[in-house]
Length: 139
Image (cartoon, rainbow, N blue to C red; front, side):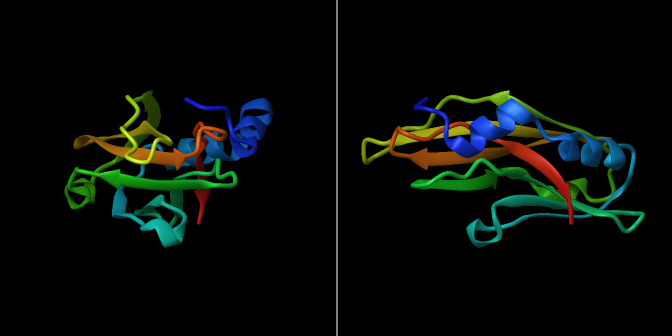
C-alpha cells in the first residue's frame, strides 16, 4: 500500500460515531431493498429497512487522484427479506494494476439471517494516496 490519503488519515485519527450508530440502529431490521450504486453515486451499498429507514455503506476516504469503486459477485436480491446482523471489514490482496500504479482492495462483509455477502471496495491510485474509510450513514 502507498501512503494513506488525507481523508483516510483524518477518519483514522478522529473516528466516526455516525458509522457505529447507523449500523447499530439497523441491527435486527428486515432488509426490504438492497442495491450497489455505480461510480457516479459515490460507490455505496444502499439498504432500505422494513421500518422505512435507509442507510448506506460507502468508502469515504477519497483524496486527490484516486479512483474508488465497489463491486460484488453475490446476488443481492437473494438477501432482500433477511434480517441485517452486522457489517465488517476484512483485508484483501491488492489487485494488479496494468499502468504501474496501486490497486488496493478491501472486503466489506455483510452478515444477514440468510448468510453473508461480500462487496469489494477498490482504490486505484498513483501510490501517493491510499487506504480505505468504509463508513455508514443514514439516507
